[in-house]
Amino acid sequence: METFGHVIDGEERESGATFDSVDPYTQETWATVALGGAAEADLAVTAARRAFDEGPWPRMGFAERGALILRFADLLESHIDELAMADTRDMGKPISDARGKDVPRAAQNFRFFADHARLAMAETLPMDTGHHAYTRYEPAGVVAAVAPWNFPLMLESWKVAPALAWGNTVVLKPAEDTPASATIMARLALEAGIPPGVLNVLHGYGPDSAGSALTEDPRVDRITFTGESGTGRVITAAAARNLTPVSLELGGKGANLVFADANLDDAVDWSIKAIFTNAGQVCLAGSRLYVERPVLDEFLSRFVAAAERLVIGDPKDPGTQLGPLASEEHWRKVTGYLDNPAGKVLTGGPGEGWVVRPTVVVDAPKDSPIQCEEIFGPVVTVTPFDTEAEAVREANDSPYGLNAMIFTENLSRAHRVAARLRAGTIWTNCFFIRDLRAPFGGFADSGWGREGGTFSREFFTEPKAVVMAIRQ
Ligand code: NAD
Image 1 (cartoon, rainbow, N blue to C red):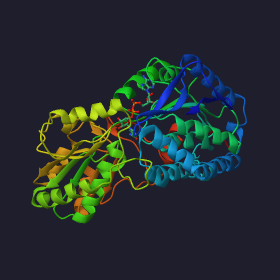
Image 2: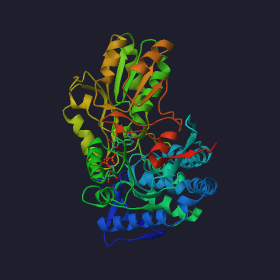
Image 3: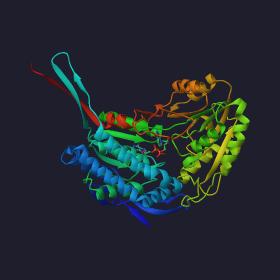
Image 4: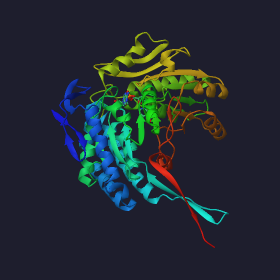
C-alpha cells in the first residue's frame, strides 16, 4: 500500500485522518492519503503566504525562477513512469495516454510558462502631456488551485505552471479521487530546488472540508478552479465574500458538426477520439454529434464500427484504449443515463466492472437529459441536420459553450460557422490540438475568464501602471 501526504512548507505531512484511493479496475484500495480539513488548509495558506511575503520566490528574476522550473520539468519527465501509473491507478486512465500524453504535456506546460514569462513584454505609453506610463506585471500573491480528477497531473500543471512562473505561491487541492500525482509533483518541485512553501499540496474533499476552507480563506489572492459548473457557482459565492478574483474552467457538452462535404475518414477518426478518449471523461468531449443527412447512414455505420473496435481492458496494459470509469459513484451516474434511455442505443452500454462500453445513441429527443446534460462518460448522441443554419442553431442550443468541432472541406463555411458558434474553442477538421498561447475557457455555464499565454498572465498578476513626468 502506498501513502501520500500533504506537502506543506517543504515537508510531507500526515493528518490524523486518512482516506483511501481505490483503483477503479481492481476495485481495491491501492493508496492511503492524508485527509485534510480546515486546520491543514490554514497551515498550507500560512506557508504559501509566508513564502510569498517573505521568501525569495516572488523577488527572483525570471531567468533564475525559470531555471528552477525547467529543472522541475526535467524531473517530471524523468519520473514519467511513477507519475503516469499514479494517475492510471487513481482513476483508470489508459497508461498509454498517461505516459504518452498527460505527463509530457505537464512538463511542457511548465517549460512553456517559464519561457513565456521570461520573454513577455510590457507596455510603454508615451503621453502628450510630458509624461510616460509603463506597465509592471507583478505576482498576484497566494493562488488556490482546485483541480478535477479527469486529467489530474496535466490540469494541475496548467494552473500551477503559470502561477509559479509569474512569481506566485500556490496551494493546490487535487480532486479526492486522484491525489497521488500531486504529492509526487510537489516532492519533485522540492528536489528541483523550488523553495519550501512555494508549491503546497492539500488533500481532502470539497464541501465542508479542505476545498471550502481553502477557497473561503481571505488570505488567498486568486482562485483558479476546474470542475463542475455547480461547484464553480459555490466557489464563486465563497470568493465573492472576500472579493477574490476567480477563474473558472467548467463543464461542457461539445457539439460536433459533420457536413456532407467533410472528409469522412477524418471526421470519423476525430469524432471517435472526441468522445471516447479517457472514456469520455473529458470536459471537451464531442458528446453531441450532428451529421448532415445525406451522409448520416454512411457516417454512422463507419462510426459504430470504429467504436466497437476500441480495445477495452486493464488500463495498466499499454494496448488498452478504454478503461473503467473513475469511480463506482461516477459509473452509477453514467449508467443511470442508459437505464431507460430516451432514444435508441446502436451500440454500447454497461461493461464489466466499472466499464461503460463506447455508446452511440440515435433519436434522442431534443430536451432529453442524455441530449442536454453533461454525462462525462463514453456516450454520444447522433442527430441529423439539413442546413448550415440549423446545425449552428442546434449546436448553440446548450447552457454550455466550451468547445465545438466542424468537419467540412468548404473553407468559407468553416470560417463562417466558427464565427457563429458560441464556444471558447472551435476545432475545424481536428480535435484537442492546443497552442498554449491561445485563450482557453468557455462561454456561459462553461466558465469565467480564459487561461493560456498572456491570458494566464492577466489572471495570475496584478498589472500596475507607473506614470512618470519627464522634465523638459
Ligand atoms: P467537481 O466540481 O466535483 O470537483 C472539482 C474539485 O473541486 C475537486 O478537487 C473537489 O474536491 C473540489 N470541490 C468540490 N466542492 C467544493 C467546494 N464546495 N469548495 C471547494 N472545492 C470543492 O468536478 P470533478 O467531478 O472533479 O470534475 C469533472 C468536471 O470538471 C466536469 O464537469 C468537467 O467538464 C469539468 N472539467 C472542466 C475542464 C475545463 O477545462 N473546462 C477540464 C476538466 C474537467
